[in-house]
Length: 201
Image 1: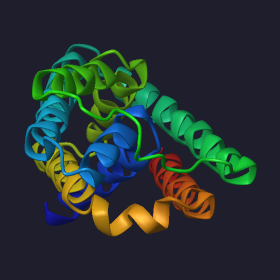
Image 2: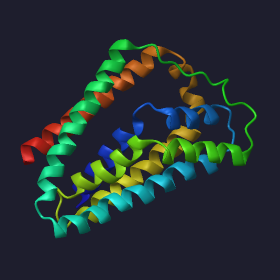
Image 3: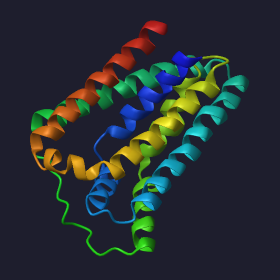
Image 4: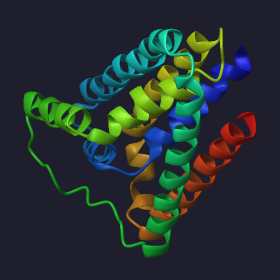
């Protein structure tokens, strides 16, 4: 059960770590120490809702269609392979760097609405949480709750670390090389999880 929890934690953490508009926005606001707690709670609670829908909603569908879980496991593995490849490509291209001077002077309401838009209007968030995490959770029959709890815990851990640790990361992520290293790490994690899913199949 504990191993399943940490599998969910590791996969969710890796998915959330992927560089995107939401993370960059939270990081920038964290660098300015602006509305950090409301923003990290907005991100983490949104993820908790989506992960819960994926893990427990998908389980209900899998009971009705028992052949769906293996199909989704292979689709999940394929998605992870592509996701990892995109991370490696981003690492090869480079060029990304954090610009903390953007989005100055946002009110709390505007900041939260911006964060909600980055979260709920991003189609990838549904693929990551509802489809991918939901399908992979079915590979742990009887332990879906542990997997989902780990995935949700990872979201809270990541966003609190990102928001409150931003000032420590500022000098590092001002350099494009740091983003390239992060992309390589994400790619390796994605491919290792995909290999695990394929071997289970």
